Image (tube, rainbow, N blue to C red; front, side, top):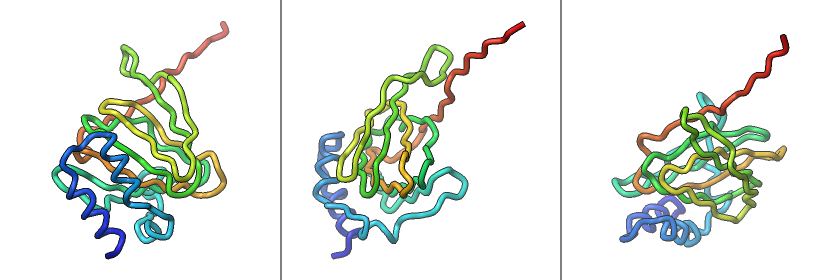
Length: 162
């Protein structure tokens, strides 16, 4: 059985879907750079490559490629819960909260290393950044599939000298 068939088997066999179960599914898949290499795409319209490799009514599987020094936009996943796995590289996951004007305010950040999982609750606002000189490859499972995701801008404070 090839790896994509295994992804389909594991995700279609899920009965309860939450961040814990998504994390267990990611670990069962034992994802390696070699397995995802044929699904990695170069950036086109976005600053990163993104490829949906499997989607059902319940779950969506995505491979993300962040080239050296690149970041995703600040975003949420709408009503979806997500779990990601760092296949190759190191990632900085920056968490934000929307302020009363709908702008993103910094909360915290965490380093996520190769072989580690990270989670996103519904409505969580974050950005992924590749601080290294090598590519960052991540594999994600979302439930339900991503819809109604939002993009955020940060608040800029300008001081004028008169």
